[in-house]
Image 1: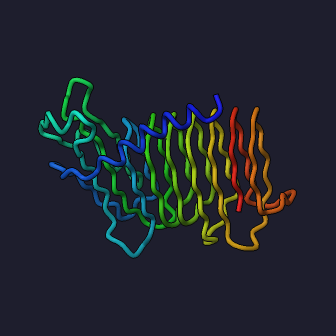
Image 2 (image 1 turned 90 degrees about the vertical axis):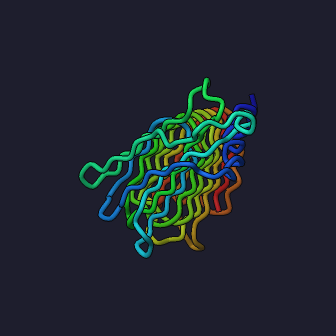
Image 3 (image 1 turned 180 degrees about the horizontal axis):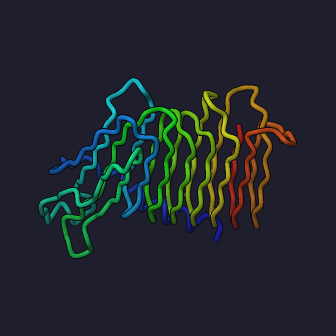
Length: 233
């Protein structure tokens, strides 16, 4: 299998991300002041999460036409998903157009959160760009392209095939990074001088590590999969 599964599934995500030039015909927005966590579910989405205090705290859901057919058949592309605030949690459920809707609307999420908010994502496929300081990151997916620039107290990712690029800035070092799936392409970058410990469990593994494996050090990195390519810097 090599990384064929990873390549096929990620190509679909990247195709979606390349179709973001159309104009959104509808938006939904929710204020996120005081939000401590966000849970994102539903259909595949393009997700941009920023956890910083010096910004307008707002979550915006928009729908844009995507795919080849949308250039020929353009219906009213509206956001069909939901955004609800329950206590200090923002609940988001994305809903894309069905196969019978030739406009092929896709969901785009721009979410600004206060610092140290927790994030849970449970979608079959998504492209996620996370920036800032987060609490726990908990992700369940089949295929995803995930990037982080900032910090998180812990990271847990489960799925079939996904690419992960996590660049930690040292604001808060994660206690554990736990990534498991079938085909994994993982890059982890830490500030200079960071001590880490790591374990790789895979049928076929390629490890490129510039940091020594320091027993008992935190963050503790655990990578588990059938095929795993791992870079630790």
